Length: 518
Image (cartoon, rainbow, N blue to C red; front, side, top):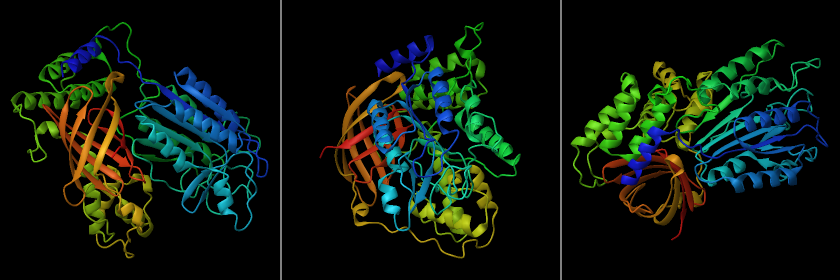
């Protein structure tokens, strides 16, 4: 682990290197067979300009037909590598058909009765686009879809097509943050009125200045964005509140906080720096690394990250150097921030069960049973929460405040196909990981089923390190723990539908893409 300590000392003396940031931006105004839009191309061009100023490499296309959209998407995904930041922006028409959301190219034909399959084949499925990005191993993926949720055959002011209320709720892939410009049952305004002289749509005009606001974390950005869009739309007696689906691990900033150029002390860096450095100290996993961290942030001793580092340092100093196994007792250094999310989900599942919503076992994984139970709760209770609130603390607070039986209709588990039930993690795998400071690591692991949904294995990497690993597979969700000498790494991931690859991200901040080899 000496090489990691060397890197850590370099970080203390110099700013961290940035990972590649790539963006796919598409804006479609001129549709051949459905109502045209007025702002989508201008939105795409404005977003492109903003992102390029922020250091993104952009792949932009406007008024693209199906072939053009597929070509642009292919160019974008072929450039992405493990550890990169991927950003997607689409402005144009969108439609939900049979639970799937589709982005429409300009040459889409006007649908008639019974042509839904044709529309599917001639459009771009959003889930397929997100899965292609996830398969690249991109560490952070953000998608913004400025497409409306109403029917353009009934209005010329919106962005959607189809007989339903436009785009539907989604289950964002692990590691992704997806934003829709309007909530369920709402229409995203292309403009406030026919006399609206603003260059951009209601949503995008609120988004643009926030992208370059220093030190504005993504979730805080979205909170302010939703409020402004709501207020703008209400000026014309319209209700539009953007929806978001958060499966992103960690924090993200389009524009990092500015440092005071008169202050040369690195310890004066803002809170996001201390959290990032804590993750790096964990990945190093030595007493010396934590000592360096504690010295660097000595003037922030009341910060939560500092207190965590102090506890981890003390535990590491007193721990036995023996390699842990999957039966090793939990130590304080194993208690990572990601566990907070798991405990919230477990408590959510217990609360749903108490209310009669049948979430199944409280395992901390948002599987199909849990998602269906939460959807039933939303339907039966009249709650103003959305599906994207599942697993959040504010949703848990609402559930725990409820009494009696809320779900009169018991949520039934979604049907599972034979292919899904036969998926297994057992076998040999290769993986590549991008970690702190763009350190790239490759390795292999062999998993053996140990009963139920538990798998154990032996892991080795290109740095000469070895670890015992324990993984639990719940549907497509993975929850794992790797026991290296001196450090325990907890991670979460998602297995591909065919069971032959998965992506994950863990407590050390590494982004991993793995594929089956035997």
